[in-house]
Length: 391
Ligand code: AMP
Ligand code: MG
Image 1 (tube, protein in one colour):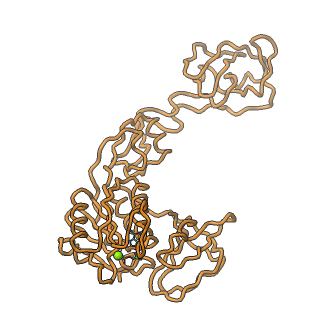
Image 2 (image 1 turned 180 degrees about the vertical axis):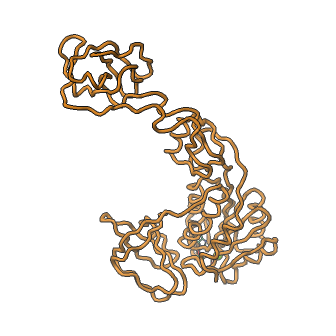
């Protein structure tokens, strides 16, 4: 049995980065930048008003001011503000020459036509100065950034309309098991619906990859062999679910060996998720995941996702937050590192979910995260601070 940390190291050490391509900004969400992005301009590009109000000189604040111009956003002011003058200005407009502050419209009173006075004691400058956020040539986003909505705003603002990103990873999914029927079928006696493949396809989609569903392979050597060969032809990574434990019909590892897949490990000291196969053939990777949906969910999170992210050029570190445990957790055996689904309660505690083994998909429905129970640990007390890994 491989320890999780050793397995993760093997997986990450075997990963390589894929090629890159330019994509439209709209298609860049969940992709990873393949180069640094520089700003082609200062930001703000000019001294910009942060308020709706009047641009004037700080030293004239005690005096009646004459309005000489109105400056809407997008217009270049034509008049310089001189002594006891002001220009009416909108948020985002260019501050006119001569002015060194903007007084808020709420802090003024009209005294005559085109005349105002400032009604407060003092004011902030209320100006966002040219280049105060970003200077021309600054790196605004680094190579390796996983692009989220907020990054797209930055890309747009520096004119990076076609970011250079790593290409999408193609991931094939095969479900093995003669007991499986697809979700639109009513299972007969001794059959169950294939939930695992669809969960995996969703997990793949969530991290910005291209999922390719190959289908169900019944438990014959021939069917599995055919499905694996098909999947290997067109994908970078293939995920098999089921057929990797010790049963009479669990012959996936043997088929992989017959196909010259180099197997790096076959069992993990992880619960759930012990029967997990990882191998490589050329530049393609194969995971044989446990058939049980909770186990397969876990192993995807723990090993598949880090591999794929690394191939996408992203140095993935799972986000974990420390929270107090809402209820004491106990287990009898402690030979494997265990992952328990937890719900984050309204008062900010981690509540371990009732969990009856690796087929218990309903426990996962309420899960906000996973906690890890190390090998050798049988009890974690209520109130103890524990890392909750976001899923
Ligand atoms: P296996 O690893 O093939 O022995 O499967 C372990 C358990 O997971 C068995 O109870 C299977 O019926 C179940 N299982 C296997 N594949 C799937 C699947 N695609 N969806 C839901 N359950 C599955
Ligand atoms: Mg099976």
